[in-house]
Length: 296
Image (cartoon, rainbow, N blue to C red):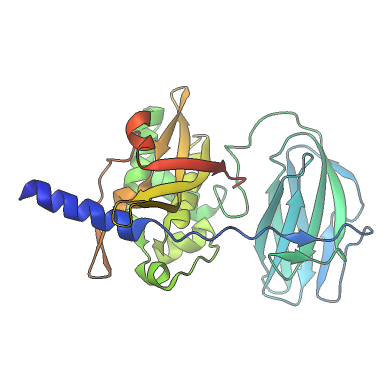
């Protein structure tokens, strides 16, 4: 009976937890002339093209909209998007130039997937340090106050790197509920880590954003991985997302979605465990195949 129960639960987990993860839209942007304003968005900082920065770019401006999007292209063609909330007509966004030294191009617009080039300027990153897996992205918000406050409650100075990662894994699996409505309706919206933490609900990509945010805030290099996970009911692989963290000199795999619980009668049951925390590579590879390490 025990084996049957475990198997049933595991099958349910495989069936329902694997996100129907649509391919992330690639932003379409125009590479026209330099510009800092439209009728709905005005960039006030920087105000001069080709300004040099050391690691971090701060963009300030005004807008008549509630949210705008910034698109960043790195020196080697890396493209990533940042949602930016507008408060009382103004916005300010700190962006880490995470793709190494060189020229970055910035666009601003009202659509996360399309930038018309009316606002377009370039900046230079002078730092040649590698901080890609330790700094925030548009959706992995390790710099946010909410994330920082949670980390303060979880991490102590005497913890090892593995103990820190485990504490964060436990928090995520106990505090984020799998969004069964999004799963069954095939909804795959992009959510920031703080939005997910505020709602306490998400699918696999959301779990990976939250874990990466907390881990980076705790000083653990962490990346968001896209891949395929084995569905034991359908006998096929489906799209999925999880994390890899650099702990004690090596990358370990962590799947907080699969460790969070299972679905029964279309309802999620929290049953936090650590089966997919630092599982040995051969065992993990039986159910997970990496297809890309994302820019998040």
